[in-house]
Length: 184
Length: 91
Figure 1 (cartoon, rainbow over the protein chains, first blue to last red):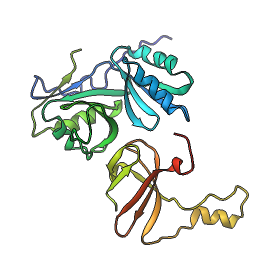
Figure 2 (cartoon, rainbow over the protein chains, first blue to last red):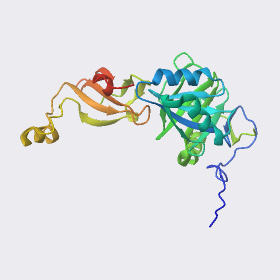
Figure 3 (cartoon, rainbow over the protein chains, first blue to last red):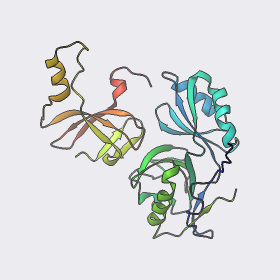
């Protein structure tokens, strides 16, 4: 028997959008290509070199020898194949495009909003643009990347996405925040 | 309880990100060691006051096992190292 599978975003119908483009904006990305890359023992440097060399991949640090790789260029269906070819025996690649949800928080109060749930120093001097790390936000583990002084990318596990967006709304209660799916 | 741990991979983090496994000092006996040696290794623990070495896992961060050397009386943290690095492990 044949089944028709439908790809449904984890936040479809539950996002509770706060419309408009206010001072701070949380954009939820609909289809981001995401993969987890784990370097083979002893090959961390080679894998890192390959990931950095290609501008089509955006590698976010998770742990030693482990990265979340996002791509705007590659489709969710092709990212893993592309990475496997490039990395060869240096690393293991697992598709996470439907396992994680990517969000972008931007605006002048972005760091302040995040500071309501994250205990890591987010001053640009301590957590510079381009840095990424996995950290605890309230009770959820999220991968936070600083893509600009007032711009952060967050990647959460799919099943936590709804709770995480709800948390962010509470964290931003004293700031002006709009929430919606990214138009792109 | 020491409240700030500097993970060698992630930087300074609150203790809520970690889970504590226990004493890092016991050394695993050989597979055919005496029952007494295994009983000591599995069940018997000292409960010292002062400087101790413990296994902590950075569950909400890099998920690596760390060895934290700290004082359970003054809350000072002396060193945090990757558990694999201590044994010359990979990565």
